[in-house]
Image (tube, rainbow, N blue to C red; front, side, top):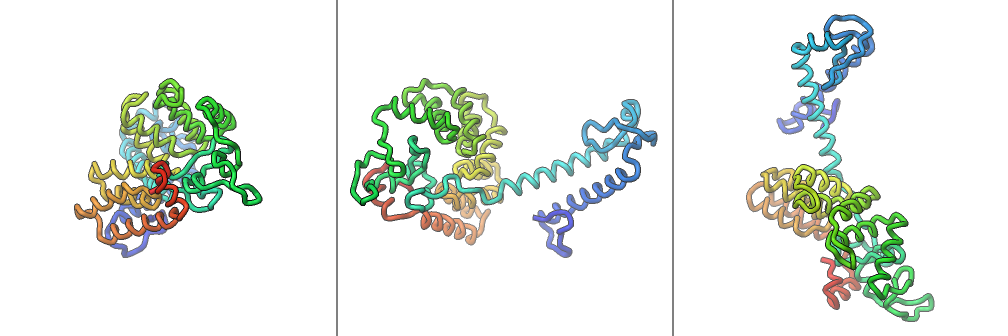
Length: 341
């Protein structure tokens, strides 16, 4: 994406040309403003007196010596003020998209036992409330051995060897201890229990949202996706599509592929196929198979090329190669709860 000072001469007419035009105007305005700052920092834009310290409330660019001069000069400044605001908004949108469409970090990383990439599908991994580790379904299902190679009770954590909780109360107590330690996944899980009224928790949307906000602030992107869903569907809050989109974006930038899929799906609905394709490509790379369906749909409607669809297929295949293992296949074949793709 072009930036001030990086526009190529002779480039074909495209969105980059618009960016270059905006960047040029911003640079010109900035240079002009810098010169003004150097020569007459506090000169009133209306009467020319020095010592002005009353700035325009909207653009913060024009300076006046008092409110009377500001009011008198308003009609002359209006056009420049609107231009400043327009360019600032365009630049802010450009910077936002640069961040939004960056390659996001991995949400879960690798399994700490087999060191393979963890699946995106939630049934493909397990959160251990004893040690706070996220372990793939294959390692969770596989037999556990001691340091001498002897098989031990399989109802133990494969990472820290702590026995699995026997009762719901014991499991809840472990979650609470992890929450008190600031573990974002434990905080998220307890929020999910409040949301659905599971595991002995009374349904409380407000409490769920409070915990998901806390989990999100601690770095668990999936929590922001859930908050976005609440605003999108009116669960515990008033329906607000704008806020829903904002939370989906935060979650997507944090590496949540489901949130990225939601953004792509929303862009398809309003006909923004270029943005939908960008979101869907990132989501597919992160393991979201539903986004591959979106890419196929965009291609079938003529808004994407065959190369785009091929690239989507390749990205998903790369993801599958990263997560696939014989041990995970065995776990998935033995128990649907260990399905990982």
